[in-house]
Image (cartoon, rainbow, N blue to C red; front, top):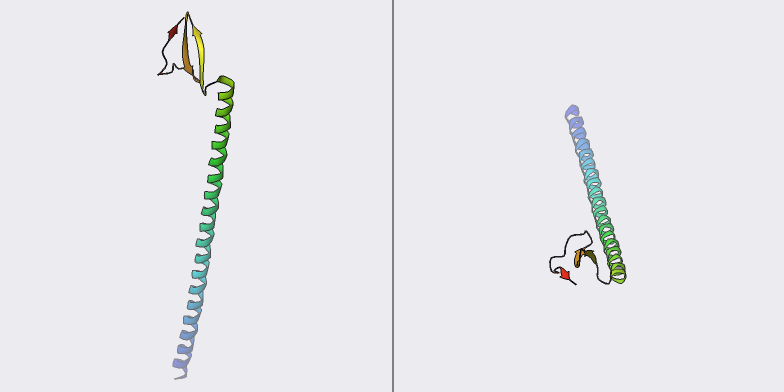
Length: 101
C-alpha cells in the first residue's frame, strides 16, 4: 500500500505542477497579447500623425504654389502665336483650350 500512496502523492504533485505551469503559460500569453495590442495602438497613432504631417505639408505646398503662380499647378506657356494652359507636368489642361491672340 505504501507504493500506492507514494504514486498517488506523486500524481497529485504532478497535477499541481502542471496546473501551475498552465496558469503561468496563460499569464504569459495574455501579457504577450496585451503587448501586441499596445504596439498596434501606437503604430496607428504614428500612422495618423504621419498622414497629418504629410497632408499639412501638401497643403502648405499648394498654398505656396497658389501664391506664386496665381493658380495651383497651372501655368501658361507660349506656343507659336497662341497660349496654351498646361498642368505642372506640361500636359495640356483638358478644360482650357488654346487661345489665339
